[in-house]
Amino acid sequence: MNNVPQPWFETQRIRADLYCITEPFYTWENRANLGLIKDRDADLLIDTGLGVSSLKLYLAELLDKPLKVVASHVQR
Image (cartoon, rainbow, N blue to C red; front, side, top):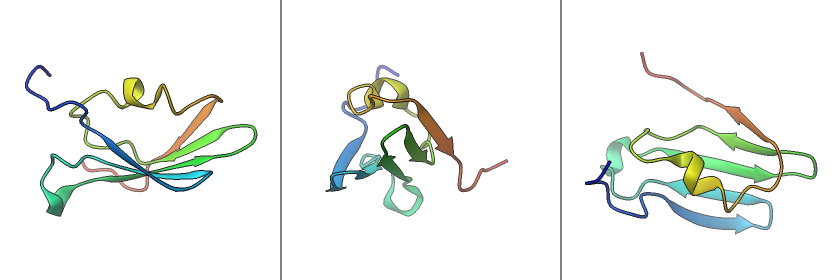
């Protein structure tokens, strides 16, 4: 991962409890959009990105509760 631009992810705060996370260095046609919804008891992440860079490390600063994850689609 040494050749991966940092930061790989970009976060846009939509409102206090909703974030859109993208991978702006990846080609636009295949770029993943991840949704992070912050709730009282847990946070919900919708999709996990392309796996080019560590999402876990990136999200560490945004998360303060248990995380639940939903994959809206998977590629085989």
